[in-house]
Length: 490
Ligand code: MN
Image (cartoon, rainbow, N blue to C red; front, side, top):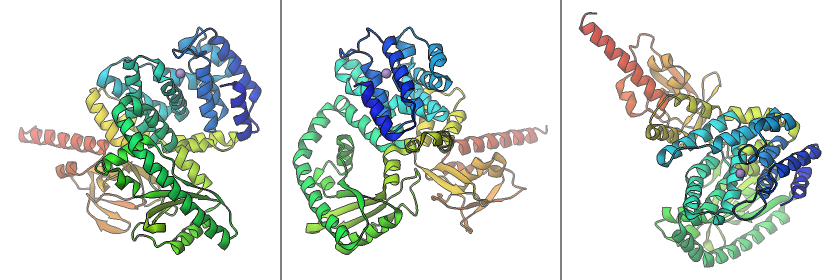
């Protein structure tokens, strides 16, 4: 890897970027790491270069790429964080500091796992760019994992699979998630990896042929019948680890996995998405109930596309995903997609992204008291890795909650008093029970009973959030203490 290759990509994506500054950062990092070698035998500077390259590829802003070049300097060289700040400013220094903090994990076993997760969440809540750098760092470390001792290989690969990939997934960064998984897979499950490679080979060739055939038909149909251009049509790329997960889900029968062929069509605008859907349905009959409009109703993580499944050529069940380029970038890069646009819009985008991630901060705050690693982990994982839904107050404020949350969760999310006095609920103007699981974009109106003594113990059996559970328990405890006082006539 060379600095020039990085500069080239940045030039393509961001004409205004200060490339001279990046060159200075490179000279600084190179000098700091002078004479150091990686365990793989390479010059050390190759590692930060690879990290910066990945970040440039993901169209990150300049400060993030600079921090990528510098990320190992405070830990591995005799230059300090203060030197970085003096030379390149506070923003870059903060990012490097964030990375350094993430790296310091002292525990072993379960404690290590919990601490690792907590640190990642803290970093996300503070500045999500730190986590992007960490992902790029981890991806290159996984690529050179062969050079390390088996114990370290296991630890790093497992950590990537158990912590980094799920977080990337949760942030909607599909591509990074798959890369982390596929690089870790052969180390964590060597036998299974070999097996998946072997059994998928032949079917993959067949599938590629089929996809070519479908592409040809649809391409011709679109070109014959309309003037609009489409940007891309492709079979979805194969990822061995997610394929392995699918095989497990399908009772270890790979034929069931390969039953379904999936193609992705990328077009210029939303109108074209619906037009393409029409053409596909004209060519092949859709399967009932399989048309999904995630453009009109995006998934909780923001995902947008049209999905349909049809009886394709030779009667083969074929799935299509139709989306615009912007939707595609959002789907692949997740929250990182907000950096894809102009540098001067960065501050605004950063604000939006950090706002989107506000709930993580609340989550970390909620859990900050000293709980045991196991309890802490369970709570964090439950709330973090569950899908989120977005619902509205009658005034139109957006509240985000974990999937399966009920009106009581909603009420306690707004305020403890609203939760404690909650007597009923209207969902989309209709009276509903307090245990009804909420759906994306529901409008929730809590009906308050000012005379209500407090929460019902029965609520504990259906609330989903830890915040609601804790507040209900707290209120019940207080009540029972009061009753005891009454009983003793105090
Ligand atoms: Mn590193």
